[in-house]
Amino acid sequence: MMNFSYTRAETVADAIAAVAADPGARFIAGGTNLVDLMKYDVMKPERLVDITRLPLREIEATDAGGLRIGALVPNSDLAYDARIQRDYPLLASAILAGASAQLRNAATTGGNLLQRTRCYYFYDVATPCNKREPGSGCAAKTGVNRVNAILGTSEACIATHPSDMCVALAALEASVHVEGPNGPRVVPFAEFHRLPGDAPQNDNTLAHGEMVVAVELPAPRFGRNHTYLKLRDRLSYAFALVSVAAALDMDGDVIVDARIALGGVAHKPWRVTDSEALLKGKPATPDSFGAAADAILSGATGYGGNDFKIELARRAVVRALAQAVAGEPQVQSDKSVN
Amino acid sequence: MELDRLAAAEPNPVSIALTVNGVERRLDVPPTVTLLDLLRERLDLTGAKKGCDQGQCGACTVLVNGRRVNACLQLAVMNDGAEITTIEGVGQPDALHPLQEAFIAHDAFQCGYCTPGQICSALGMMSEGHAKTAAEIRELMSGNLCRCGAYGNIVDAIEDVMGRSAFKEAAE
Image (cartoon, rainbow over all chains, first blue to last red; front, side):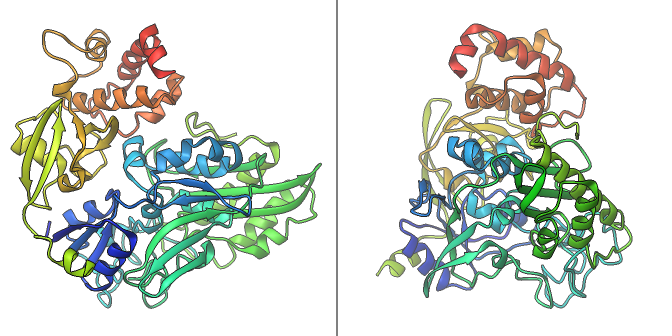
């Protein structure tokens, strides 16, 4: 690990000022991804500003009937919070589908949004990677790309965003509260992460020195008809090859409103509102599920090793919608898929 | 003014205080040192193991303020003021913790390398109180790999201890 200087921030303003003033500075909270990346010299910050003492650990009710989740709330505390379990079970399920209990205890809400891709070539400093070293090339496109993206890719990058939690937050249309050198702003979840384009080094739309201070959930919906279905190479403690967050408003057998977000397939949680619109007013049948799945996967492209993801994702969407309609969300401990 | 104060922070080393297995320790630690390396190399507590050193195996699991975490992914300086429990603080050779006894009784290891992490992780899981069934124990222990493949017996050992009334009450 490269040497770095360490600063413990006492206030949000102090932390932002310290990072904004130093191009080589980064915030650190749970550290579960950043410390790992620093050991491999994938990330080499010159200064770490420790934000773990900041007062960002509350989950508070909002005037809009939702919840405001402080950026430092650990993933485990969020998943097991009684309000989240009762009113946002899709979010609780997605969080518990990710990582391990130890990592969820350390990892924070803000950090989950900011974790980096697990593309093998991003981690391997002996290979080219435009995300790690802009302009060096992409080894994944012609390499071992089983885990890489099939949607929204670019010439420069086919990395995926690895989070499960973020897939649920995309489906729930959360928003991200950010503070920075130029003041606070609120970013709709769909606009927080970005596609790689020709600047894959930028995972998201934050400027240097900007800090996630909270994630806000809108008033609860989809309490009954939802699921988080995650498919991976082993039954637990592995990143998604494909995951689906599905949430429906139903009137009898008719779908009134639908949300579908995919994980493991793109540089950000993948939502196509046109595919959701196809379900509105339709009966909950395999045909309508298939049409929505085809629409969300429109334009999907494989790179050899990940070609299988296109059909896997299509089938996962259909299966997830069936689980949501039945009100039988995927259980994250019993892994049999119904 | 605040910037000046932050900029004046010394890069190396940082003075911290930790309570490790009930004993307060004051240490000067470079920021690059992980909690795992501090425990093993500076405090000679070699129970927590360095398996993968990247948060994938769980052999380094310790309790920080009662919560199980991967010590390999914790910077020691960030844990200033924390209470740390390692396997050395769980039981003694002549006074084993019930989980340690159960691991022996159920043959829940072969080489034993993952065992300190397994037991610290199981302690953390029991105090979290979310595992009620064998399937839930398996899922919530998935952060601890056992390359000998003793998983079935590890689940049995944990289930055995969880089934005893004292632990049931503690979890409730």
